[in-house]
Image (cartoon, rainbow, N blue to C red; front, side, top):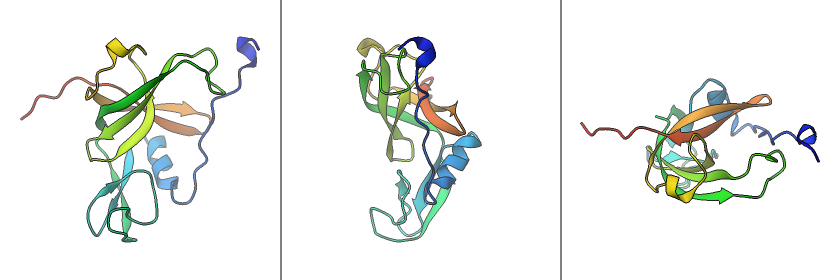
Length: 144
């Protein structure tokens, strides 16, 4: 297979529960659910709070900031990623508390460049008719 024959990267298909998340990414916002009962922030989107079981979930705009919790450097191309290896698959701990799986961009995919707890910020990548949240290194924030 040559470079012109690569398959496109997969595109997420929204469901009724996840549609507000994808509407947010298209608008350049990272959105999370928050439980109306216990106020816990939730990621991935669902109908009930995983902490208290309440059904009252609503959407909030997240800060888009987080920290690198864990990562793997993938050297084997998944469909659509041919010619782009290695790349970083990251677990990002969001400032609001939940963790999410994403890709890390804007940094070399080498262990010496990837420090756990490094500050990250969301960026968005258009893919087909969707927009996906990715994360890149952010400048360290100065405490107030």
